[in-house]
Amino acid sequence: MKTIKYLFATLTLMAAISSCSKDDENPSKIEENPLAEYNMLTNLKANGHEVQVYSDQNKFVVGYNELFIRIKDEATDSYISDAEISWLPIMHMTEMMHSCPKSEVLKTDDASVYSGYVIFQMPGNTDEYWEMGLEYTVNGQTFNATERIEVNAPSDDKQTISSFMGSDASRYVVAMMPFDAEVKVNDFSAMVFKMENMMSFQTVEGYTIAIDPRMPGMGNHSSPNNEDMVYDSSTKMYNGKLSLTMTGYWKINLKLMNSTGEVLKGEDITEENESSSLFFEIEF
Image (cartoon, rainbow, N blue to C red; front, side):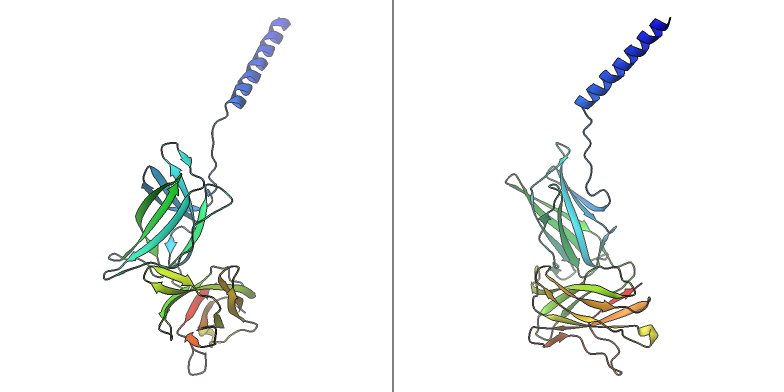
């Protein structure tokens, strides 16, 4: 009886080992999504592909949007590596169309993921809307995909971007880079673009952005140890220091000055003038 039990146990163990060996030889194909922690904002389906656009935000918003793209081949159910991608967001207004500042779309360390940024100047509405156009090349063949997207105003309704005509008769876009505000001297960055035409915006180099943060609800007081933003060619951003001495609502008054010191937009804060016409807002 003991011999039978031993033989049965041995056969069971051998069967289990055989099963495991077969599973190892034919593992299930599981592809992890490198953007699993991000939100898919849109999925453009065209040309037998799915062009998936991701963000760490849950929607497209006015201001700076860092975006990530993956292209799925529907026939093979796999993601395409080494594609060449360009994009052109277009705002369809009732009387005209225009684009917005944007970066090139670049490859990341993950061969199937591409990234870039788009800076929307305004939200869409019932009659006026944004459309995202993408052109991509795979194995020498070029495809196009276009889809209407919803661009929303910031949930806190704070101003983080300004589009204006400068005193030099050029149109500019100044956008604040996202950051986590704290009671301290914060690193503070912005990007500046000049509109060449309705579809093209170029990075502006060599200017200066003077900053003067104020708390309108607290006697319009300022703060010490602020540093104006100057251009950094390595990041193509304007970097400075923003001193926040307490939590609450801050208006960050700005002056944009060209390379000769001429003020293109914005004013000094005085007893008579409590706010610049060029500013950002934060509340924390």
